[in-house]
Amino acid sequence: MKLMTKRKYDQVARAEGAEQTRRRILDAVAQRLREAPTEQLSLDRVARIAGVSRSTIYVDFGSRAGLFDAFVADLSERTGIGELTAAVGADDPRTHLREAIAAASRMKARDLDIYRVLHAMDRLDPTSAAEAVRRIEDDRRGGVAHLAQRLAAAGVLRDDVSVEWAIDVLWALTSFESLDLLITGRGLGVEDAVERLTATAERTLCTSAGTSERFS
Image (tube, rainbow, N blue to C red):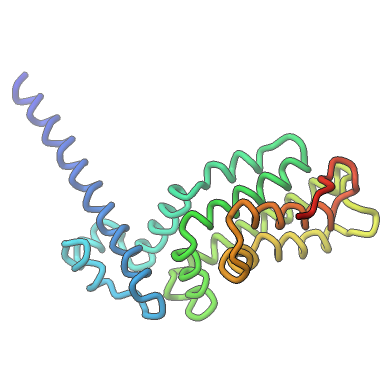
């Protein structure tokens, strides 16, 4: 019995140690991206910051691409992907519109600097981000298309707005750049930026019923 207990304890300790190592590596990636946003990420530097060997990164993540995939997944999780998923599941398409834009905006705003670096990497050197950011953008593309189609099916789109037009407008308003321009460029708080983006989307695309009447 004591031997079995010790084995179980050792297994738990090893699992906790592995998770702590993984956490240190992911945190080191974030630190390095903040410290040198214009430089290609060096796995040697990440390893030094995390206090591990370069080979440990490969053991834990398989490859540079695997590390970036894990980093972006972790970033999404800790900044609010669950809130975005809940918003997309709203029964009412207008609620889906407002809450999805709000959730996505708040999610990016929780770590604006890191999202800015990742999107810049995607534009300038897509291979450096191991296509992880590209997959986020592909998911966003599918999301705005689904939303536009829901609005159309519910008869919520204005008569002069086609589904394709709605997709284009939503694509622009849900981009990282639109949020960053309002927060960084205009100095707005997150909730003020959210209000402008959601009000613009709803008033541009939807029939007047249920639309807020206030601009500030």
